[in-house]
Length: 115
Image 1 (tube, helix red, strand yellow):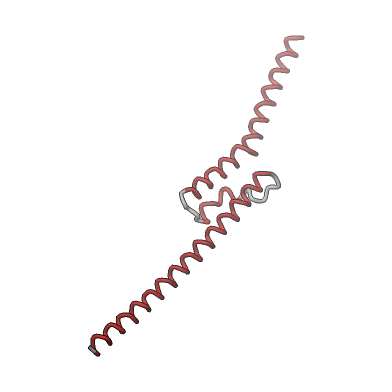
Image 2 (image 1 turned 120 degrees about the vertical axis):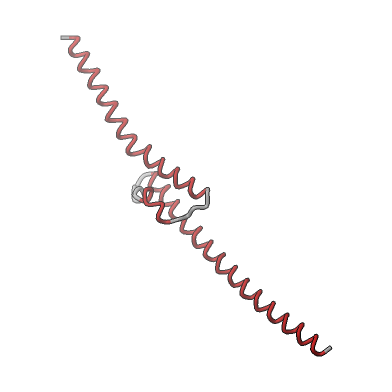
């Protein structure tokens, strides 16, 4: 009878450990892996919105993982906005440079005609 109780207790502990490990994997390991993958993409300057679908499913969690994912989403949006502003400013500088070059060429041409 004691051996039966001992075997039953061991089986119960094994089942409990398996269930607990599955829970921890599902609630912690997988989301942290998704966040890590997203951080690696950001480190490679890949800010593509479509590639972040896997991590976005964790965004509305109310724990630390949800907070990390929300911060990553804000960071990505801010970086995309900054890159867009830099792109716009560089296009403006390029257009102004072209205008200045055209004006300088006209001025040089007038100076040559007058000389």
